Length: 351
Image (cartoon, rainbow, N blue to C red; front, side, top):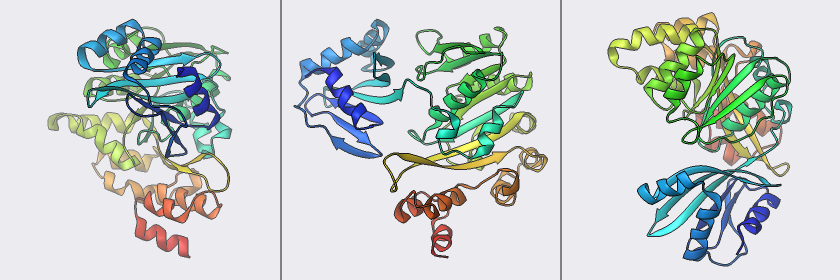
């Protein structure tokens, strides 16, 4: 069994993920559904061969030491893959996320028009949030590419691992990968501030040090883009504040209120009108009213502000889900299952 045959099969099926586990046939995720491939069971020897074929030497060493390793793999003519190698029941396994090599234009992603407007911001913090597999990386890549085609600026991305590969167009783009090019996000972000950037993409604000430095970078005049694994705008603000010790939370509320520009929270749905996926998107824009709510620790009122600010581009997740349903793109069952307030959405869909 050849790895390239598995990857080609997954690409032809428009899969988002591939799972290779010794003792099992290959499985792919196609539009959220786990689908076995019509291929033989992967032997232990074959799985070990996949590891040496895909992983760089430092990842092989890390796997030998910790039994887990994250790395990227590029298959010429197909795609780049974000790979996790791990052990389960004593057998080697791989979870592979497919990252298409071509960055899709923003207008092809079925995102609200306001997101394109965010690429004109000169400074501040823009967060794209959602569960794993919600399309955060694709949205950010499309935003970076839009700026790459418009500006003459210096863009630095800090990623784990590098997913979409950019070609410097009008902008100069540097991409740094965790492990290969930098020891930690926090270390790389600290040094990035001395590398004359205009725009910084931080793969994930996963700890306090990284979060502090990202907010500081936004405060000092940079445009900072990053992600969090949160499912709403209000939860995103609360998560950032809760990272800090209690004695520093008033200060971070003030800093966040000054620097935050927008929070985009995404959920992906399988389309019923055509093959593929479509995002439902909650959009919070940092208006003066929103900034005051953050300063005054009244984040529970953020959903009400979003609800009453549709005219300037804000949208609740449930309203976005309802629009997808009424446009015939997603099923009623999927819509209600992913809603923040299922009962209210069910009444809305029945109206």
